[in-house]
Length: 444
Image 1 (cartoon, rainbow, N blue to C red):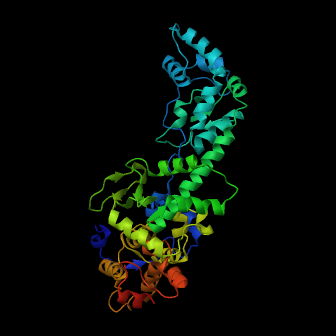
Image 2 (cartoon, helix red, strand yellow; image 1 turned 90 degrees about the horizontal axis):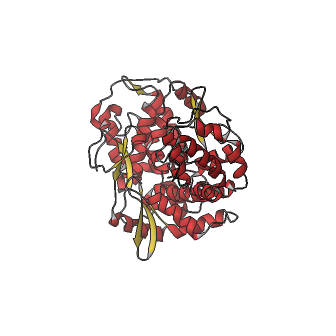
Image 3 (cartoon, rainbow, N blue to C red; image 1 turned 180 degrees about the vertical axis):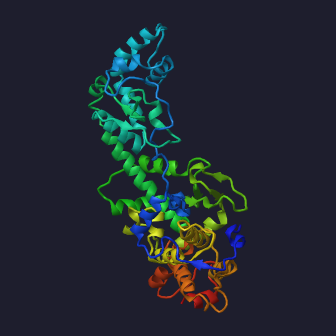
């Protein structure tokens, strides 16, 4: 296992009450927003929250139509560049043979675009939720700002809307002729289908982050039991599985074992300044990368764990929550954040130190499987002095122990140690324990 650079980078000798000390959760977030501190969005489990094909707003493009918002289709075409007109024809699959002049291309597109009902329906059927929402609003005559940049940029190849500038902002709109031509397309039908797929993907990803691995069919059965009215086909479900596990940048992988299809955690986030081998990167995560952890032996051991412990999957409290909402919402996490807000070392960020410290503890316990003793020792080397009889900083020691006991644990099938003890009646560990006897005594 690699070690965090923070471990030996600083030896803290003095602490003071930070700018966020004593604030409740809502006040704290408001204060951070005022300082434009977006660090919490980049926390470890929050990187794993992102569901593929959901962030599809459409900025990053340049306006190629100089018409006014609300102009007629003909005016929009006349105000577009020739290259843009050719792209529209290509995306709408309209042949431009015989139309060499701009006037000829405009006339052809003006006549043919409203007739492309099948093409319109075919394009929107493959859109993600955000793009579908944009199309719905365009059909209702709204002007929709382009939003943030997206890798998929689905709207950029949508030939039935125009991107113009409005008060300096890039804005999409659909001319009246096209709105009337495609008014009967049931875009909401595709949105409902995508919402179901997104819910399934969110459920799968949450269970995998908390438990390390999950049988696909088990998660789907749990979803059907919790939301019986939300009907979905096997094809939709497997599409969600495919989207969740496709590509080298996905932190999830599809794993076949003894005739069962699982989704496993294939990578976990680390700070970019850590040492170690990384083959996953994510430019939108600022100073974070995803470190590969594909390990068939680990997966097989987790399968054994799942067979011996009541599954966490199917619990109602996880159905509509992401992993970060669950983990960062735990009272033990909030207590630790509050403690570090009140004990900020000189030279550290008033607004980001507490999140970073708690973030590292969560990742070390959940993904790196660091022992409790090891983490208390790491904090001691930073200057917190926890390991000298555990008495010199009793409050912090108690909070770290509490965090350790209440975070989800893979060997407990996603339950925390506290929950596992409640279920089993006694911590009868399965497989190779990540706890040593002295740690059970400390955590008791």
